[in-house]
Length: 360
Image 1 (cartoon, rainbow, N blue to C red):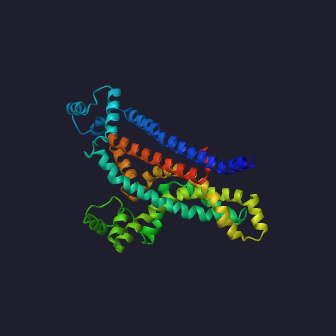
Image 2 (cartoon, rainbow, N blue to C red; image 1 turned 30 degrees about the vertical axis):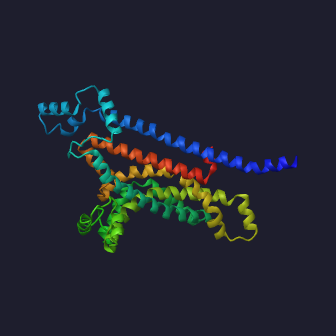
Image 3 (tube, one colour; image 1 turned 180 degrees about the vertical axis):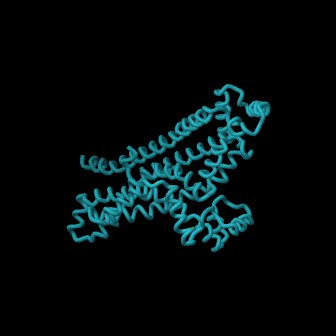
């Protein structure tokens, strides 16, 4: 009887581990499969909404071609066929990796995505670093000084951070640090000299900083980073304010838990309690909302890239919208949707690994 009981006790952790691993695998699979309908629904909405005002050729070239030339171009592109037929043709092209060709500059949309997508991804990564460097330490300070003047000041800063339009912050930063002080470049991803150096690289990657590091060219590294500082700060402040509020709120809740009070009663310092015991639980909500914040940053990237002439997907999206190039617009929007969907998937998996409650 005792032997059976001992075996039961020994087998219990194994069964728990199997259930946990099975729950995680099922959760990851379901979250991955949800990416497909998400992208499909958004792609369908963009396709039909773009055609409410007419076909893309008439929208892009209506003022530059005669009616006969427009009719000929529409027939060549298949836009004289029923809309549902065009939709299924577009879906088939997407499945084959063919997103069409832009009408304003006759460039394959896939080339636009690969050329400019890396620039947007680079900017979002820089901005996430800025948001974490601002939000996490300031949120910890606000939690430790709860209901005192530093906490009140930081809460106001957080509200201003995510309430102020990103283009206004960008223009303000340019006026102060570029025009006024002359410390940082006004616009672009590289200086003229840096672009000349970059053009001589064999098999370049789309990431300027990566190529500069690969060359070991200190001047080029500084050039790339200096051009990224102001756009990253302008976009990072937007999310940094949200992170500050999240860290503050969750750290206050964590620091009131029983195990924190027990550690405090044993003489553990407040700094150790905050950094070792209070910070990790407070970071879990940041990880869970990270995917949503990446979507917010991609939306803000349109204004940020336009303000700083940062040649990424956001900047090109604004340019193609001005020229009413609907084929390019729907390709870029779909790529942004893919980035958001994959980012949310990765964030959900990380959150499930850190906090087992997420997966059930």
